[in-house]
Image (cartoon, rainbow over all chains, first blue to last red; front, side, top):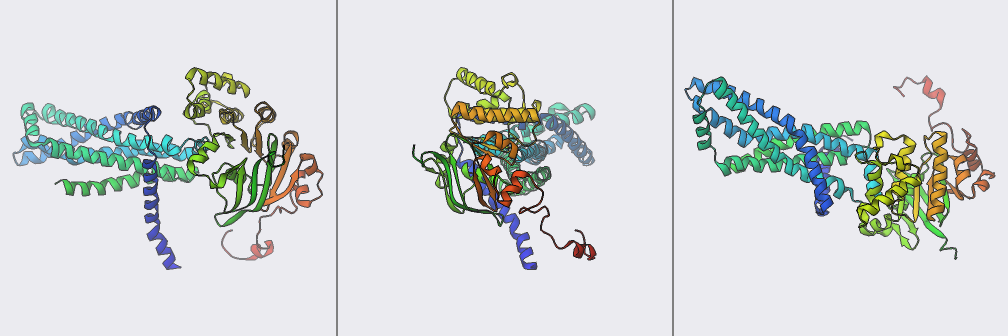
Length: 255
Length: 272
């Protein structure tokens, strides 16, 4: 009995992962790009991306602010206050921008996608599509998957820009640093492809993972209010863990 | 017309188990073409399962399901899709898309499966909504409609492509008397106007008497009676009698199977 239980505990996540992969392969194997599909993808980019702008802008600004505050304080002790823009830009472009934006995206757009699809399951809307010979994979899943892939990199860009604005606000306007050296140090230390491009590449992976997990947990949610609530929680937890693990793996390959 | 051509849907020796529980066992069911057939039975008897078998959402472990000359349980995804364009289904709560207006809900299958110009789609949708009496609600979202109105819009959506078969899953559940009367008339009108074969899954005996040409009762996973609603009402069979008269106890027991009451009350075990 104990063996059977431990077997279930061990195999259940593997089975769940296998089902999620089969789901993903099915979604991609039925991919079609008609005008209606493109319009739906744009609509989902709006819901997942544009509607996440407020939280991304506010968070980005304050992350830039606090990051500059901490680094300025530390670097001043070593007489290296000029390097604050270097630290800010590198940590943002390489790590903080993609990771924090992905976590915020999971909390704002991922949960919304999961709840929407879960409720569509609970209220038989997915069944209704199926019965009307309209493929729910094509109509519901694919646009949201692709929207995540497009929206998160764009949100990471916005996050990075507003974080740098926050950094400038603190360093230049509050601490009186020289704006020219602030920009010059940043430009000299950031490599376009390695630092900025690497971070953007991460954001594409994170966007894909976040959208995949959001649609999967919604799709597989039990058709009850408790089931949908559980699925939205699972989306946030699974995305956060997956993004952090993937971030380490990608960073290891990029360095 | 031969006997076989008068049968629109046929389930032959169908057995199905779900979650380890036997739902249907050697079930045979013939649904005549062009008429309203009611599939009745106690809750949990497998009525909705029959509907899901007809629409190809479920496949039987044993037996055959035929719609006309097409064997449904052997169809691939594409062929099933083509078949479903000829079957309109009204699900229990309507299942309207909450982000679309009534108009767009009804237009959805037309936009998806036809290449008609938008001007013609508009006219068709308005005609369908007129048929269910909700042309004036074309611009309303499902959240702005009552339960009965939602089902009427969903009915308009189900018949958007003028299907040969209309299936209704519990169309009378939870309706007020006026909405119920409207639903009864609507199903009859659609059957008459479009010449469809109508399958009504229900346990509302009185409504069936007013609506159906043919009725059958499912119990213990098989058809226990079939005939006109009047024939079923006159049946001497205890199970059919209990069902048609709505008696609380009989062959279908009032009590869910349990240990003897006195033993359970006197024991010190944990709840329940």
